Length: 394
Ligand code: LCS
Image 1 (cartoon, protein in one colour):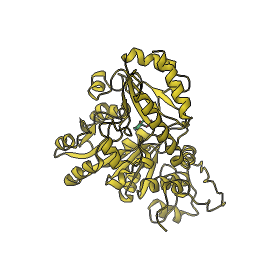
Image 2 (cartoon, helix red, strand yellow):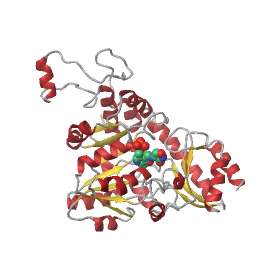
Image 3 (cartoon, helix red, strand yellow):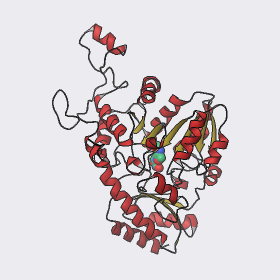
Image 4 (cartoon, rainbow, N blue to C red):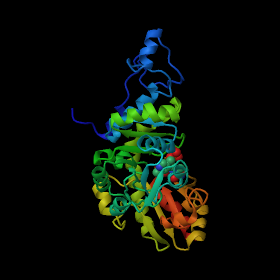
C-alpha cells in the first residue's frame, strides 16, 4: 500500500486498539511506574535486554502513541514527547551539543527561544551566533571549527521570515553539523523539514498539534538512532517528560490537524489579502502572499502557507493598541494555533523587553507597531468584519 495521506495518518498512525482491553480510543496510562513479573524480568528490562515499560519518565504507552503518530506525520522514524515546546528545544540542543560548543541560530525567532540562545545557553557555557537566517550565506559565514548545530525556525515567529531549508542542510552536511528546525508555525501539513534533510524537528505541540489551547507540550522528531539516544541520555536525566493526560489531549487534537490546517490556511490567506487591500495597513507579512519577499521560497519548500499573519498599521504603537482594544471576535492573548483567532502585540508580549532586549528585538526587525494574528477556524467573513470595524476606529 502506498503511504497514506496526512488526513489518514493523522487518524490512524501510532494508534492501535489497546492490546489488553481492546479499547478503541488510546487509554490514558496515568501511572508513574510499571510492575515486573519477577526479579529476573525487572533486571532484563532495566538493562535494556527485554522490551517493557519501566517508569513514565523512561516511556509510557500513551506517550508512545503520540510519538508514533508524530513520527509518521513528519516523515521521521521516532519522536519524543516533552513537557513543553521549550523543553523539546532544550532537549534537542542538549542532545546535539555540549558546553563549549558553538551553535548558529536565527535572530528573528520566538521570544522564549531568543532568550534561551541570547541569555541562558551562554550562561551554561554554550557559544551562540545569531544571524539573519533568511540568508544562507550569513549562516555559512558564522560557522567555526567548534560549531556543532545550526538551529532554524521557519516560518519564524512573529515575522514569518523563511529560511531556505535545503540550502542550510547542504551547508550543514558539508561541515558535519546537526540541523534542528522548529516546525511549529508550519506543522507537517505545510512543511516537512525531515524530508528536506534536516536532522531533528522540534515543535511546540501546545499550538496547532493540540489545536485547542488546553495544554502545554512539545515534541522532537527525527531518525530513530538520534531520538533514542536523546531519550536515553538527555530526556531521561533532565526529566522534561510529558504527562500522559497531556499527551492524550495532543493525540486527540492531532486527529483533526490536517482538517484544521486546511481551514487555518484558507482563512489566513483571505485575511492577509483583506488586510493588504487596506490603506490603513502599512505592511502584511504572510508567506502565501505574492508580495512576501520570500514567496518563491515558500512555494518551493512549503505545501501550504499556514495560519499565522503579522501586520503593521499606520500610526505605529498607538494605532496598534487601539486596534488590539477594539477587536471583539479576535482574542487578545499570547499563544497561537488555537481554533479561536488570537491577536497579540509581540513588542509588549512574546518579545517584551524582559525576554528580548528592545535593541535586539528591533535588530531582528520586530517593530513596535507589529501585530500578530493567529487566524482561527471561524467564518472568515466574521473575522474580516471584526477587523474592519476595529480598523475603522483608528
Ligand atoms: N517555538 C515556537 C515557534 C513558539 O512560538 C513557541 C511558543 C515555542 C517554541 C515554545 O513552546 P511552549 O514551550 O510554549 O510550548 N510560542 C508562544 C507564543 O508565540 N506566544 O506564547 C507562546
